[in-house]
Length: 343
Image (cartoon, rainbow, N blue to C red; front, side, top):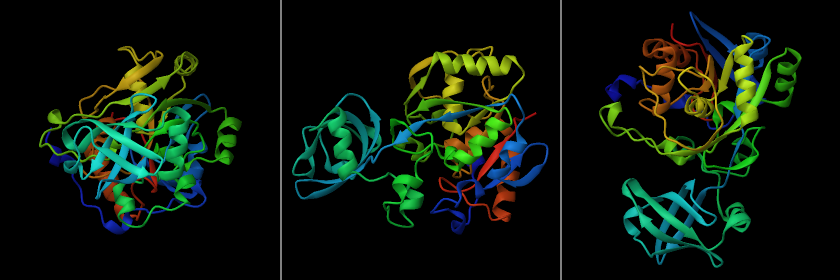
């Protein structure tokens, strides 16, 4: 399909630069046979006993580093962990780097450029590894807010908690699974009281999720691979819930992509541990989920293509037009939607 088919105009004032307080006060647009305006706090009443929510428990790390290569300033955003001391990263300006260059972030923290790829991507080997590397990132790194937020204001200490879900435990993401940002312990208690189940999976979201689609046709776009983990226990819980007539509710497109990667042709979920670069566009046949909770995405982005595949392109264009008219807040810190599948 033509990428331009997924374009729309968003007023810049609707880009959220802080999350709603409290988190469940965010608006929730239900997109089914009709459009219904709610808040996230209404969600327990919109689901039913036996449904199962699937969350992503990845934890965002301070993956943006600012350093120098000799006199040149260099910014790197990590996006894929490849070893105890190795990451792939997007560098700015990448043209100033070549293999064997050393980027210095502090007197005791450096990275060696070991390889250079297309698109501003480099492979880095750090002077620290394992837990020590994570300590260095905590000290010298910053939370890698998406460019549409960091261009509005500076990243600050509040973002270290705001840009993290309450499920976050497995370090490795460089972008938050943003649909999960709306959930609080109080909301989870309501789900439990109503007999709505909850499980977690792990997909370490990469910085590739922010990359614009630069091709004219969706068939020519390449997704960056991300690491996902889905355990046997979680697979069993999902299969059992569906066998009993419950609906599988993916919280976020990250959970959805992992579930679809772990599903066989019949929709049965299997354990998964590895890379996925699944790219979902209209025409894709969904196997693993029944409902999707997700934020409002960028024009011509792979995520808007995904939700258009799930609910229908015309339906999503109408939903986004409604959200814009009703002043919904967009993107990572913005409001969200509950999507039903295209009929």
